[in-house]
Length: 167
Image (tube, rainbow, N blue to C red; front, side):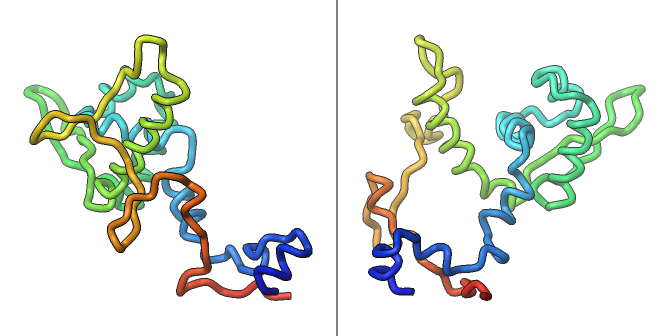
């Protein structure tokens, strides 16, 4: 079905394509639950120890255990052993390269949350550029270097791994 035919019938062209290999869906299997980005926020902020995360976030113990194990299994976090004097060995959680790649998403979530859910006095968290201190925000731009300022300027299209829906 062409775009014009799809529009004529009121059906989006996206319905012609399979979602079996959707990378958004696959990414959400890794970080799309209620607690994953809370855990990642803490690690990005330097809170790397289980007890500190648990105390700060009030995530139930088993949920935090499961989330950390899942993020380690998915190579988003890695365990780093440490031992305090007179204590048993424990783990800190550190970001992997795959985990660091999620930073722009955290910044984008913070931008969105700050715009729609901040208290009247403002957001409780800001991200600043280490070199100059200016606020950092998530921005869209195309590969040709143009800034994309409006969501409607972006046209989703099938990528090289897209497959037509069967039937």
